[in-house]
Amino acid sequence: MYRVKVSKMNNTDVDEVFRLEELVHPNHHWSKESFYNELSNNLAYYYCVKNEKDNILAYIGFWLIIDEAHITTLAVHPDFRRNQLAQILLIKMIDICYKNMVKYITLEVRESNLPAILLYEKFLFESIGMRKNYYQDNGENAIIMFTQNIWYDKFKKNFINIKEGISRILVSYDE
Ligand SMILES: CC(C)(COP(=O)(O)OP(=O)(O)OC[C@H]1O[C@@H](n2cnc3c(N)ncnc32)[C@H](O)[C@@H]1OP(=O)(O)O)[C@@H](O)C(=O)NCCC(=O)NCCS
Image 1 (cartoon, protein in one colour):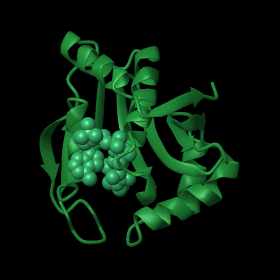
Image 2 (image 1 turned 30 degrees about the vertical axis):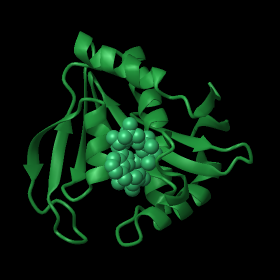
Image 3 (image 1 turned 60 degrees about the vertical axis):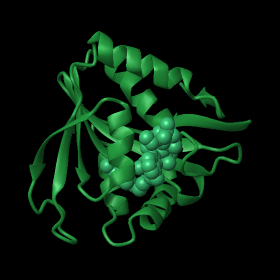
Image 4 (image 1 turned 90 degrees about the vertical axis):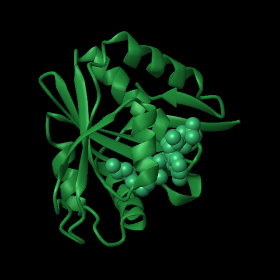
């Protein structure tokens, strides 16, 4: 079984996160400064998935603002996709949302990004609108996705099912 660790991203991770960011988004990636700024923002939460050699395989970022969470970034190394790593990071995020009494989670996703849309739909996010020409690199539209209230039974039951379905990977948490 593959073992991974979920840990808070910190400044010493930024070089490696940035290399992964460039690999995942060659034409429209964040700068290192963006990551450093995010890590010093009190509203922002950033987590990495690392393997046993401490290599970063995936990361997520989100903001918590009162009772709403906004996912800012989520990326998985191309060689490690379809291994439940994105689900592991979303589970970590949603657990933090419950601890912080968040009610709704939202994000924007490129309308062509079917893998991501299907991932979010698995967690019962729904498309509620569109931001026209949102992405500066190619003018692509963003789909706005929202959860229903995450405290509703339907969302919670689905979330528990997803957690129980993490079977291919042994996950430990730094905190
Ligand atoms: C989208 C992304 C984060 C998914 O990461 P991943 O670790 O491969 O996803 P998981 O293995 O956890 O898959 C979870 C679910 O997502 C959906 N999914 C993920 N990749 C998919 C693909 N290529 N085709 C269809 N469905 C896909 C499926 O519903 C899957 O559930 P299933 O395995 O039960 O079918 C990854 O492809 C990625 O990093 N893409 C580039 C960056 C990006 O688009 N980020 C999102 C920005 S909003």
